[in-house]
Length: 80
Image (cartoon, rainbow, N blue to C red; front, side):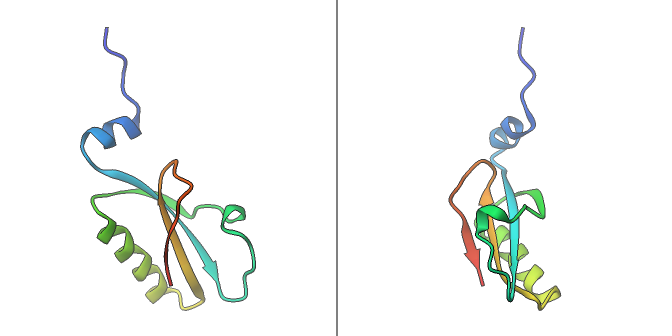
């Protein structure tokens, strides 16, 4: 019998990456590991992830930098 695949397995099968986002505001001196993700969402490309980061920064001028990374990865991608 076929095991029911997890959400992330389904997303990988569909070639859609699941990405998490974290933000650092001006004057905030925490390490990225200490900052909780603000949300997770599926994206279809790196360009989409960067566009989401830029949209955050446009909407909230107190944001200094946004980090996005693939779910489960410790390697972050930064937009400032």
